[in-house]
Length: 226
Image 1 (spheres, rainbow, N blue to C red):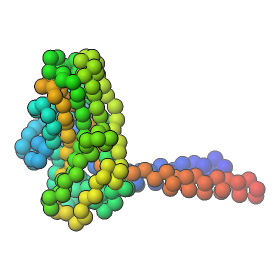
Image 2 (cartoon, rainbow, N blue to C red; image 1 turned 90 degrees about the horizontal axis):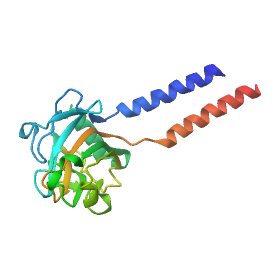
Image 3 (tube, rainbow, N blue to C red; image 1 turned 120 degrees about the vertical axis):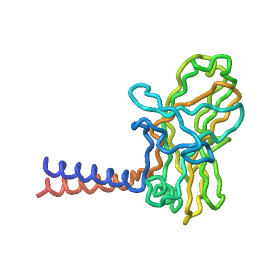
Image 4 (cartoon, rainbow, N blue to C red; image 1 turned 45 degrees about the horizontal axis):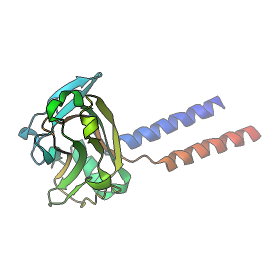
């Protein structure tokens, strides 16, 4: 019995690992660089973002350049062999099967008199054919802080995860150039965000793991009856 469950556990780990590595990309900034990010609609050379270690993890610092709405940072590629291009290309063929996620860290103690009364985060996708869509505004805003929070001097941090199809993305397939970017919207003059672990990856499939678990249970019951 022990051998059976050990084999099943290995199978589950391999299944999850295989799915996680298939057409996925993560920007963790652990090499101390911004890993190819530039301005919202620019390339890598258009901007260099500062990388800061907070709590033992490197994070990309993205200041809100001016009060109002702005596509503050973007990562783009026409290199079909890059991990980013492969993940975005796969997502364009199956938006419902792909998620976007990232960690954010907002330290309002650094905002001072420029804290503003609202600050919102979102994201967008863009292609070489001109397609553009954003997970913003309305109910799809990913993070939102009000004036009281911004003036509190506190740190607000967390994890954002959303499904591409649920966000309304319908990326045309067969693109030769793909971009993903970060939106910041606020009325303060010193607002900023630290981003980490920005990931585009296949959505988990609980059904597949449930089926595997049911199979293991059935095997165990059969072995017991024998």
